[in-house]
Length: 208
Ligand code: 5GP
Ligand code: 5GP
Ligand code: 5GP
Image 1 (cartoon, protein in one colour):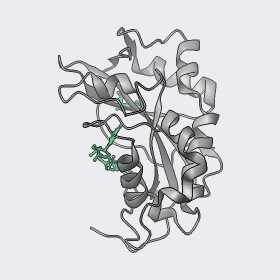
Image 2 (cartoon, rainbow, N blue to C red):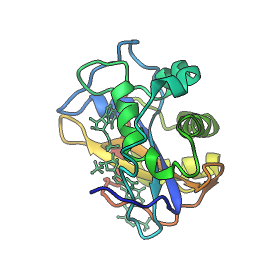
Image 3 (cartoon, rainbow, N blue to C red):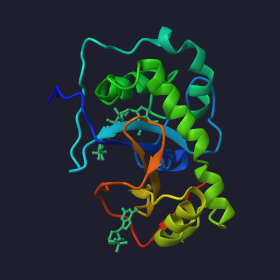
């Protein structure tokens, strides 16, 4: 349903591992620009309330406008690629994220500011480096959830939330990593509330 609220408490900054999006039953399609780099990609920057609920689709009059982010497009293609099928230039993914989530922070961030903020946060949080520095590599092996969380906390300073999905054989794997950001989009914070959902205690980290 459409929320009128412009206010929210914090953002979830959500990054996805492309290998885990692609090795599911549903599979994936590379964007027209080619296979993305083997790195975490941005899924979204999502306004949220401290009680765990969240506003969505806050302003039908503020639709996505590519012209407003023309200077960011090459950076977006690199760091925010869509892996959904059919192959696309990722614009539909960004449109969805702006209209569902971005419009709910429009009193704080313009459309350009919203995408720019997400790209800046991605640059500040090198999740792949945090993991590989701790010996946790995208090699198809399984790693302990606790070790994954500690590696990120150690490198970035904040406790992440890990969302798992299952591969085509039903194994639990590292799909998305949530970090929390203050409601100006400037700084990472400890999450006021964590999402829900189960992982195994050992989860696969597939290659891409
Ligand atoms: P799923 O049901 O697959 O977990 O999530 C579907 C979509 O709902 C997400 O991609 C996101 O747009 C939204 N969503 C799910 N959980 C949360 C949440 O905790 N906070 C916010 N802001 N959005 C969420
Ligand atoms: P959310 O789950 O944030 O509401 O939105 C995810 C939507 O974006 C879904 O409709 C999904 O099909 C689409 N989408 C397009 N590309 C991607 C992608 O690379 N990853 C994910 N998780 N969703 C994508
Ligand atoms: P604790 O708060 O004791 O670390 O964990 C409580 C429960 O939440 C345990 O079942 C644990 O496996 C689960 N859990 C802890 N951290 C995460 C996480 O980042 N993602 C998911 N999906 N479950 C977690």
